[in-house]
Length: 78
Image 1 (tube, rainbow, N blue to C red):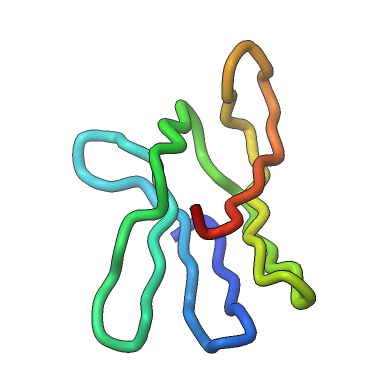
Image 2: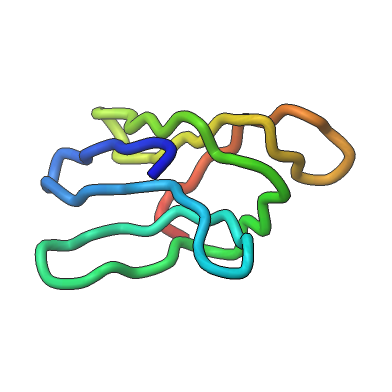
C-alpha cells in the first residue's frame, strides 16, 4: 500500500501495486474492494487525499498521465 484515504462515508481508498506491476487505486466499501476507473499509472501513486466537501479523491505521485512525469489527478466518482 502506497497511500490511503477515508471519505465522509467511511469508505477506505488505497493505492498499491498489484501482481504484474499494475498500479491502481481501489475502494473498500466495508464488504469488498473495487477498482476505481482506468488510471493506468506507470509509476507509484504516493498520496491520496479526499476533499471533505465533495468526496472527490485526489491522487498524486511520480506517475504520468499523458506526457507529464509527475501528476495530480482527481476522481469524482465517475
